[in-house]
Amino acid sequence: MTKRKMLAIIIALIMCVSLLACSGRESDSDVQSKFGTFIVVKKGLIKGTAVDQYIMYDPDTMVMYSYLDENKGGGFTVMYNADGTLKIYSPER
Image (cartoon, rainbow, N blue to C red; front, top):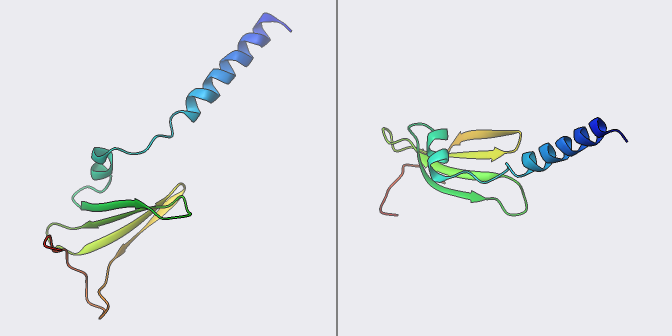
């Protein structure tokens, strides 16, 4: 095997290992900047899945929202009470 080929293999292995190490979790500031003006109340991993759920509210309207975040996509929805009215954030709860 030539020196060039060996060097190319070593560089490729180093790149693979370094790319695998970049899959860390988000910090709180990353999460907050991801949602702009929304205030994140709770973040959690849904059991048995690779899906993160964020519970947040809009500080202007106090309406609560849920965002499900998976590797290749996500979904954003408003939250409702049992009677069908919008769920309003209350810090006392």
